[in-house]
Amino acid sequence: MEKDIKKIVKEGYAKVAKRGTSCCSSNSCCSSSNNARDISKTVGYSDDEMNAVPDGANLGLGCGNPLAIVSLKEGDVVLDLGSGAGFDAFLAAKKVGKTGRVIGVDMTPEMLERARTNAKKGGFDNVEFRSGEIEKLPIEDNVIDVIISNCVINLSPDKEAVFKEAFRVLKPGGRLMVSDLVLAKDLPQQIKESVEAYVGCLAGAIKKDDYLGFIKQAGFQDIKVISEADYPVDAMFDNLEAASDAIVSIKVSAKKIKGGSK
Image (cartoon, rainbow, N blue to C red; front, side):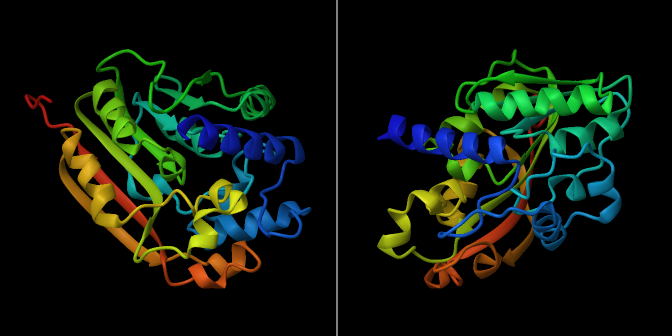
């Protein structure tokens, strides 16, 4: 089942990467880059942020702005889980400067190709994109200052493993800052079984308490829900009104405390 889910997600995001737009309805996919801008503005990105990245980096796939809740500083080493076409990675790169570094990890070859092309186009020398799965990161232990992720962890069939890996690669004192989707109540069965809903980050969502529980079990402390808001399902998808009050967008922060262990 886990392999089936990853295959569905990889194939879905490969199509998005090739099209260069987010798939936002059950009947057809968006054809205008303006839609990606509209979606990104809805979930918290400013015009300045959207204008600061290369064309084609923002595919409108986020459910929040993880950089809005983290104060990145010069010299930080940042890891972006599920980096896609590079939108958040490029925004982070501008904040950490030439003495910092951003590593994006994604499992979809087409996304990696697009992200690397965007990095060259934008002259982002302090960003690299690595092929890998977020349940088994191609990153050494204790080397990352800040982990960001935007609407990706809920796609994983093994969220517990994701947070354990995040804890492993963070330096003591390092921070986890994620935007993601969780459930306020159970999803209708037809949405749970929908391929489109899975690629759109809905079908893989779990209850908020379970999500936060996995973060705690991984060893993180000082776990905080920075913000919580209804997710505009009706604006993203056609025919999924039944999920409109079940999906919640949250921003969560946590720390790997110095001297702590797991």
